[in-house]
Each structure stands twice: as C-alpha cells, then as structure tokens.
Image (cartoon, rainbow, N blue to C red):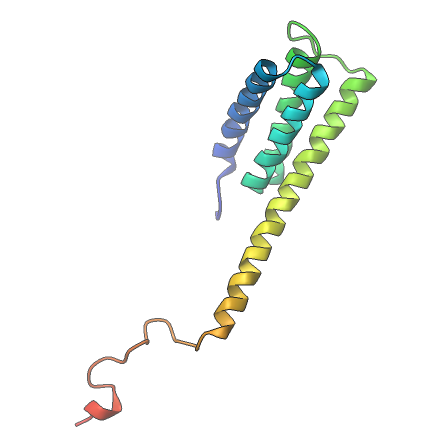
Amino acid sequence: MRGRPVEMLLPAGFVWAVGACVVASLAFSEATARVIVMAVAVGVFGVWVRSYFAALATGAMSWCFATGFLAHSEGQLAFGSADLLRLASFTAVALVGCGWGYVRVARRRHRLMRADSRRAPVILGRLHGRPGELPHEAQ
C-alpha cells in the first residue's frame, strides 16, 4: 500500500481534532469562531492526509467535539438544524481539503515532469559507461 496507512491516520485525526478543540476553546469565547477554527483544522488535516476516509472521519470527530463541547455545554450532542449544518460544513471542508491535497500533489508532479523533460535523457545507471564499454577503451 502506498502512502500513509489508514490505521495510523485515524488516530492522528482524533488527536488533531482534540488539539483543535482545545486551541479553539482557549483562543475564542464565541461559539461561531470556535467552529470556524475547528473547520479550518479539518481542512488542513484533509490537505495533509489526502485520504477521503480519514478526512471524513476526522470531520465527524471534530463535529462531535464542536457540538458537544464548543457549541453546547457538558458534552451534549444534539441534532438540531444548526448542529446538522455544522456536520455538513465539516464534511464539505474535509472533502474540499482532501481534494485540494490531491491537486497540490498533481501540480507538483506536473512541474517535476516538465522540468525533467528539459534535461538530456539519461538511462538510469548509465550516466557513465562501465570501463571497457566505452568506445575509446575498446581493445
């Protein structure tokens, strides 16, 4: 499997969501600003991991923390219209962040391929011939 394994990304997403919740609760007193900080954290995590499953799981965990601890008191989860709007926004931010991560990688690969096409083609491992294979060393 290429890339980062999902088994490591899910705990990392949980830690990321808890850290974002702590930072949001310490930095802001208004619920809307706290939710925005959490949404930005979910987007940044999605850009970093480039795994839709891990980004969506982190978005769901962040929604639980934002709804339970930042919007409501004492860890109460609710499913009112504002809570479902928060869930939809965390889901959308996770998907957009993950998509942006893929776009960044594709642009970087495209730039590298363009830069490589300007160089002289070299067969891997054959930059210099082995002794005895060069025409001036033939016996």
